[in-house]
Image 1 (cartoon, rainbow, N blue to C red):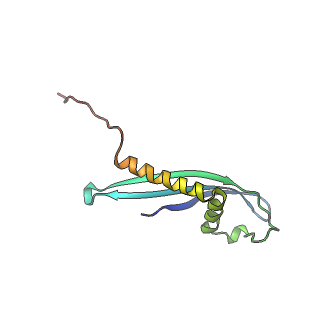
Image 2 (spheres, rainbow, N blue to C red):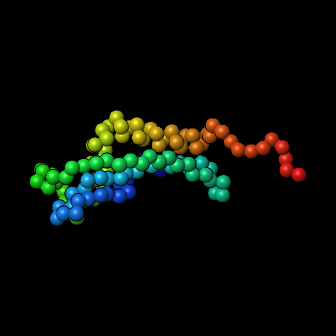
Image 3 (tube, rainbow, N blue to C red):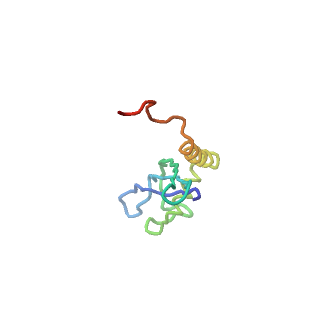
Amino acid sequence: MAIQWSITNTEYNNDSDKGIIRAEWKCTNSEVVGSGDSAVTHTGTVLGMESYTPDASADGYVAYDSLTEANVVSWVKATLGSDEVTRVETKVAAQITKSKTPPTSWGKPWSEE
């Protein structure tokens, strides 16, 4: 799978413009190791929220009812900036790597009788 950015929710003003004031986002990826019954899916996820001050008179303003998830994802990425987007995506990849090669395990060195 490839990195996926999505919007999990938005908060908007209760006026006629319904300008979005907060966007909750999720960045996720997964990798399947093995096949059939022994397949294991390793997943990484980072969540966040960005705040906005909507201005219906601004150039390029998109009305609430015309917004798409892609619009809001692009806002989030622009707000974060390319360095932070890279950091988030790297953190997702690191979670998958850690899941595939955990630093600790559970168990007992003796058998149950």
